[in-house]
Image (cartoon, rainbow, N blue to C red):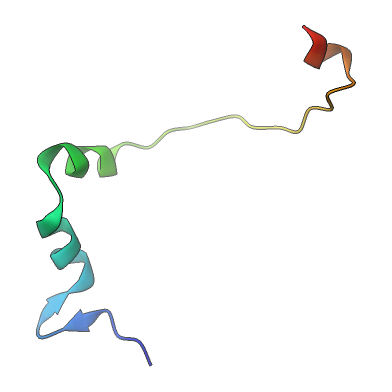
Length: 47
């Protein structure tokens, strides 16, 4: 079975070590998007 730990270093730690500072900051950002289906034939879509 797959184990995320190899040689005492976790996958997360190894991955974070490879990221640039900019990439690490981006990992902390959470975007909230209100997504909903909209039919292309609807009046709202035409607006």
